[in-house]
Length: 311
Ligand code: APR
Image (cartoon, rainbow, N blue to C red; front, side, top):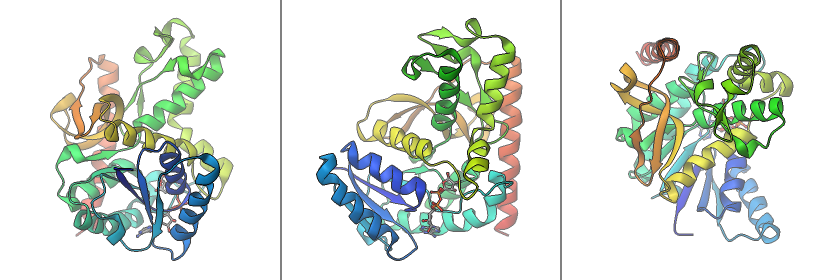
């Protein structure tokens, strides 16, 4: 492959993302982890699967960053996942330390890469990666909205018994309890769901979407969701690698858009070879605006907690 993607963290999300990336033949993959043997073992296993899956992506596992040099994209999943009862924010100090370490190495070996951040608490981890890398804002992007929208779409399809392919959904805001699913912009075959479902049912699906990660954590008990997070990160990487100009909800650094300044928060963006090529501003109702600003305030709190940690 002529493109190279490094995935840091060879755990559930990272290894699944490596598998999807390789099977789609989007790029060669370098899998990096701090635990000796794990990235090497998973890379070898995936390489052997390639014979059956019929793809020619190369997958290399390593504990050092040299092999990741000059990656086009780096997906960062390193960190500890949530346990039952933990909020994403409980992960803040541990994962901030990990993110700092990883970003320093990545910035050293792949100064031109585009970073896709997956580790939680997502919006805060984007800030760490942005600050530590010194990369311009278009090259640091958080994976949240694609996942949250995918969850909303799954619940819409289940509720209406329609093909999930016919669904479209938009979720804005931070990747947490304050996320802002937008029913007005969520459709089935182009028809807004507000025309297809009662307000009560929409409210129930919106609530389930906002709680979508915790629902899975409480079922798994020893970890958090990984199939949909991995798919979502790969979807973003694909838009960038193929310069598709796909419009997707992602955590992007805002400087005045939506009246928000200096924060990573989920908004619709155009993803292409430069990373975030445009933040798309859509008109929001007063209620939606208020919900987005409430979500921004929650992200701001995390950003302030981060600043205290680094003192
Ligand atoms: N450098 C590289 N890898 C690291 C480091 C580090 N400093 N610290 C931890 N890791 C690795 C772990 O060894 C582990 O293999 O990160 C991997 C994380 O994998 P899992 O524990 O399986 O967690 P996962 O479910 O993949 O979630 C990863 O994504 O969705 C988010 O909240 C989730 O922050 C979590 C992240």
